[in-house]
Image (tube, rainbow, N blue to C red; front, side, top):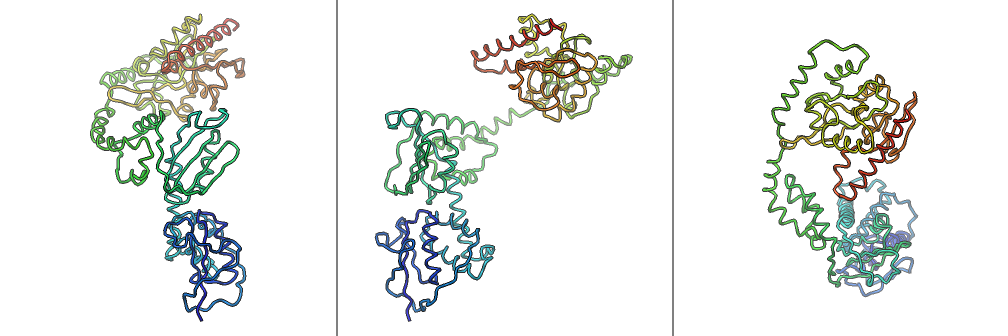
Length: 509
């Protein structure tokens, strides 16, 4: 007796419910996989794309018998499907392989008696399904990485103008639009956008995410060039590291098929061709040892530590002498010398900075470099005399990164700040200032003994206990780094106002 074959025609756009409804009907009637022909209206290889077949719960239709297998006579009892299978099916159904429906139904049929089937990755059908799912996930990942939005001009939006609108074109291998669209909804929730692909379109209008599966296979790639292309090229050029270039690995992560829609991809041939020359340039700029006088200054500083009589205990001089041989953190290994605080040991105001810079490290005195000179200048304008202040740093050794013959400042980390707080606490205990001025986040963290946001304390007086008050402002080095002149002058004026507030507080002490 010949088996009557069943043909199921689905839309084939990656919808789990569509396939599951049809599969349930087949399983309930105990129809084996070899008796089912699965087709899709979307697949190019579908010979029955224009024909009507079974979908959902419609009665099973029949075509001419094609095998000699007997047709089942009894319905099959229902059974629970492992969650892992549902997850696998959600991915596999998005693949463009026309055999995906049949493959999943074969696995479902076998799961009746093999509950742990999916754990057997050596099984050919399981391995095939896992490979299809991996390909879909990779395609979805590439979509999130390589979609480039272009802003539509106002006359193209048709909107009320309250929200900007953007358009993107992407060419996926599989039916992943519905699967990936929620990512873009979360990531770009504050703008209206449309992502068109040959396999469907996703759109977000600020209230609703809509996905259509209209085929755009014949739609040519639109012309999507705008001013943002230059920003993408600048960004890519700056993150490109010729020393780590591996062409095959780069093309695996950024396949050539996506290049035509990526403005930065036009730079790739040029960057690859010039990689070797750029590596040589980078090698020429590699760090070298600082000039010899740095080492000489360090030797002189160490010799001074052991010369002369020990200062009286409990004085700033005694604390300074002890700090000169500090090894509480690794920073002492590369610094020229310890840079301790200076000023009256009974000063009412103590100013705490971050750490010594290059010039301070060589001279052994705080606040004499560019940032120190700026502090002196603005403090003078605010009426605050430096000679009545005790000035010091939260960290006493210079932390830097060698760059040729230069030593570039590096911000101390939490461990280094914590280790050096021993000395700052000693300075505070001996000087007994009524007002401490913390300049910068490092100084604020050290004084407070825990991390605080500078913006939360800037320009504010905070009681510290024991009749002591903290005032917080920025470090003058911040002002030196601002590239915009107008912004820099604005921040300088604000820093001057901060120091004027310190002057007023000093007069009341």
